[in-house]
Image (cartoon, rainbow, N blue to C red; front, side, top):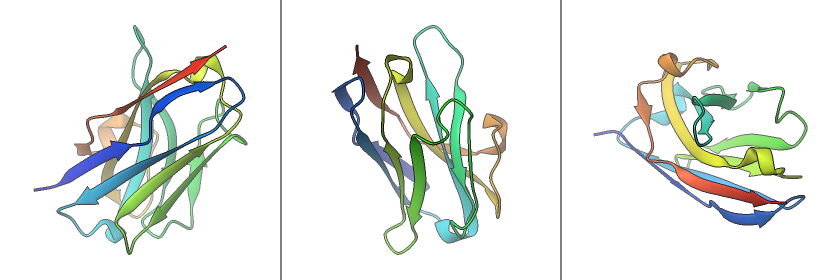
Length: 124
């Protein structure tokens, strides 16, 4: 059974940093792309970043480009999201997901397994 467990969320002041982790199990994750999405209250789930199965190729939403960094450690089956220069508009529940082989996608429908989410709150 595939499981994704996020951690690392919390409350941080604007301008601060957080590092999210997603521990994966039940699949050979080195064969699959992984991604981070987020959902703010009253809004639809939106794409944040994706990393290819090898981790060599990454892609970011314009809203986080230059501030967030996605990475993965295949030996640990763990996906990370380093978030710097956080803004109040980054407040959301952050979800990791896995799905397509090779390269990822910004479309939620491309992913077949999701974690339960970790909440990030950025105060102004």
